[in-house]
Image (cartoon, rainbow, N blue to C red; front, side, top):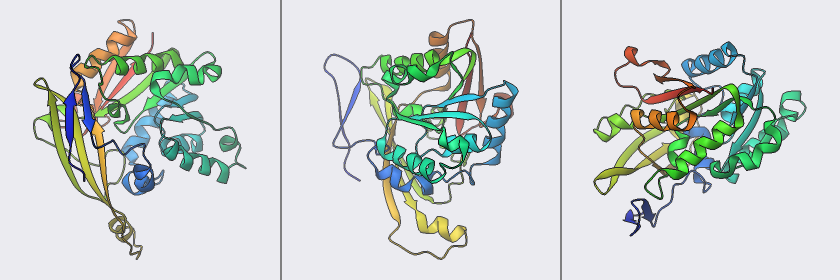
Length: 297
């Protein structure tokens, strides 16, 4: 991995990282995504049950997946009978989703599947023509939102993104959004349970925390992903030069600060709940992920 250099703006408290970029969007992540995350068949049952039960309980039909990646969750929802619009900021990720749509184009749900490249900061402008009366749910999982860093030091872009999510929802619609348990990670405690996926191919994770003006402003996680290990665990005897080094960067949202940001954007009339690994917070001590559910007023 290249060395990390970082600096602050002279006039603001945002963070600039020099000489290294988050590799989610540059194609490297897309190349190992199936090993890193898995496919619809290896999504954990707890996650699938939580998501499907909640969407059906609330009568959700039209879903906007704003961090679809290669399309894994969108595909699962299409297969379960939901109408899905999928967006992502990485054209290299979306290429895999487009390929799946083409391969399964004879299936009505996939023939109607809308996929768009969209930045969260202009999301509503990109999809406004298909928002209609609003989506029943907007989903943003796998700590995707934390990839949006705080360039200006006041979280203005993060708030703008959440405001766009809100605009896409109908009254009574749900925002489902998550982030890692950065509270514990900043304390040096790193829960690594595979909540969304079976992470047998991840052989090593190194975590670095960078602070700005005494406040944590960026988390850099270096992964080693070994496709051979996953293939061996699945009974496949495939050998290759399969180890990939991957660097991802995240903004360290704490549970309380993220919830407060949601309440600032959605207002007091909306309803809020926060779960830990899809359980009530009083049922789990050290969750890997916090999942926030907002019902728009």
